Length: 122
Figure (cartoon, rainbow, N blue to C red):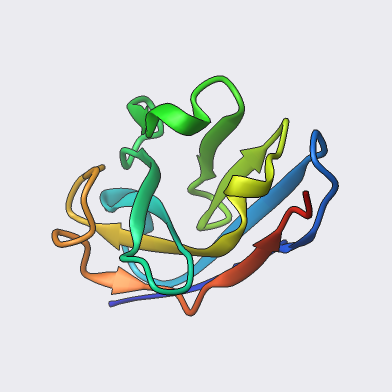
């Protein structure tokens, strides 16, 4: 019932910022939690951040705490990941996912976008 597509990826200098967007189509977007995950070549997709349906609850992996902010605009059916203080290790393909709660693992999420590339050169 939900289709997702990410945008906003690109190349940013270390210490710079990018904002990723996850646009949703379908019904009942506000009833879904949204997660952001990152995947690098040869690695499993890993958790970055998650937000509850209302936007009140958020969680982050330790490596991005204080630098990344997850948010959502349910009226626009869009979730965001504001990335500040970027580091080379933030490089990867970022995916957004929707599911029945703001889970910190990938398995519970039902819907996934195709991903957007983020590159931070050393």
